[in-house]
Image (cartoon, rainbow, N blue to C red):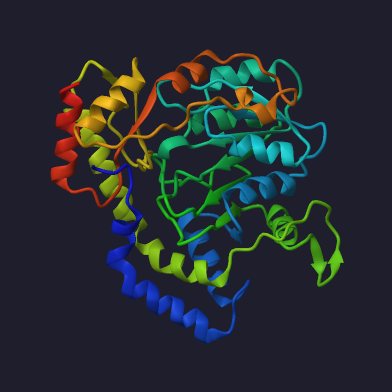
Length: 364
């Protein structure tokens, strides 16, 4: 079976380097917020093109702390898409805010600027979480001016888009007021455990995030900010990420190469494919649409191709959200939930495996 992803294949070639980095942490005697975290924060900030990066415990904490750094709290309405597995919605609810769901552009799976404009006409919005889904940058050229016009803060959710860049070279995480990243092992830049980061060029937001990730302290045992967390990227994960970061652009290029082969060579009428991509897309996932998803999955499995679903339930239909948000139906979001299907796409796929996936799809 050709897998959707294989972490063993991804990490094994780097095993000796990672073991050496792990030993350096063990020998250092520093395990939390030490020199490796500082070095990684500096390196990742330079990579993203921002002034500050703060390592945190995971990507969902990064989203929540981003919102708290912007002082999102009870009663604040925050716009967000509903097709990204609840992470943004979870962070909004954790802050006491109210999610206001925005439909997607069916061409990109990301927030539709026209849909956002319609939502803004319904009442005040304090912030917008813009999710760069599946590795593709959202339409920041349209979304940012719209938010600026209305004085709305912009949080980028970059959990699936490490390294994605627009035509000017601006990378994911450097467009909005603040950004969140996940380093979950399956991400384009993944740790060997949980991890996340908040990125910003705003000095005040950075300082608030540094306090919030460690109990809200302004000094040791002085809890100045409400809503603080124990959420810190540990030294071990930071040391490993320092080894992996230089490989990221090469991995992204291989992902794009695979995605573009799929888009060029899959010709099955049973599948609707995304367009070929450039630097704006780092192909975290290769997601197609199909009319009869269950049957398509069964057929591909019978031909040795594993698939997955990202994501089958809109946030506003999740049991935990009932009664906590506007549940107005979003037609494009719901169409995605019924039809999306993920094909194998990770850097270590061989050319033969890619050809096998293409052949299987063309036999549908």
